[in-house]
Length: 282
Ligand code: CAA
Image (cartoon, rainbow, N blue to C red; front, side, top):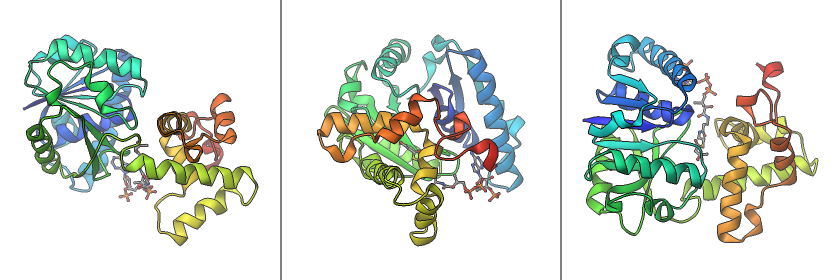
C-alpha cells in the first residue's frame, strides 16, 4: 500500500515516518525543497533513536529507502491513501485538497491532519467526499499513540473503519469525534492553556510554578505553558480563534499575553522563546 503525505513540517514528517517504519511505501511531499531536506534529517534522527532502542525494524537507511521525498505532487497519482498536513489555514488546505483530488484515483482515502478546521467545510474541496475524514495525529507523532478521527456528514463509515484498522496496525490507538470545533482534544486542551495564560498574565504565579503544578500535581508530562510553547503559540492562537469564532464563547478567546508573544515573533520552542527562553534554558 502506498501512502502520500502532503506537507513535511513537524507533523507531516512524523506521519510519513510512522507509515514508513511500518512497511508502507511513502511519498513525502513538500512544495519547498529546503523543507524536504529538513524532513529527511528529522526522520533520520528520530528513526536512529527508535532503532537504538529496538523499537523499529531496520536501520534508518533501510527504512528511508521506502520514502520518496518530492516537491512534485503529480508523483502521488498511485497512492492508496493521502494525508494532508499543510499549514492550518483554510485557503492552503482547500487548495491542497483540490490538488490531491485531481491527482489520485477516486477510491484513494484522503485524510486531513487539521486540528481545528471543520471536516464538513474541508470536504467540499474533495472529489468523492465519502472517502475523506479528519485524521488528527499528536506531536511527537512517532511517540504519541493517540489519533483523533473526525467524520463529515458524507464520510462513508466503511472508510472510517478502514482507517482505524490501518492506524491500529501502526501501533496507534484512535478515538472518534463528531465534527464540532476543536473535536475532543483541543476543545478541552485550549481552555486549559488559555486559563494558564490568564493566571500568568494576572501574576497569580510565574510560568515555572504554573507548569510545576500540572507536572507534579496532576502528573502531566508538561505543564500547560510548556505545552503551549511545544505546540507553537501561533498554532494555539489560531485554534483558539477558530473555537472562539465558531462557539462565540469567551472561554475560548485568545488572551492578550498570547497575542503579544505571537506578534513579537515569540512562537515557543520553534522560535527559541515563548513563555520560556530555550536558548537559555536548554
Ligand atoms: N522520535 C523518537 N523519539 C523521541 C521523539 C521523536 N520525535 N521525541 C521524543 N523522543 C524520545 C526521546 O528520545 C526520549 O527517549 P529516552 O527516554 O529513551 O531518552 C523520550 O522520547 C522522552 O523524551 P525527552 O527525554 O526528550 O523528554 P520528555 O521525557 O519530556 O518527553 C515528550 C518528551 C514525549 C514530548 C513528553 O514531554 C510529552 O509527552 N509531552 C506532552 C506532549 C503532548 O501533549 N503532545 C500533544 C500536543 S497537542 C497536539 O499535538 C495536537 C494539537 O492539535 C495541538
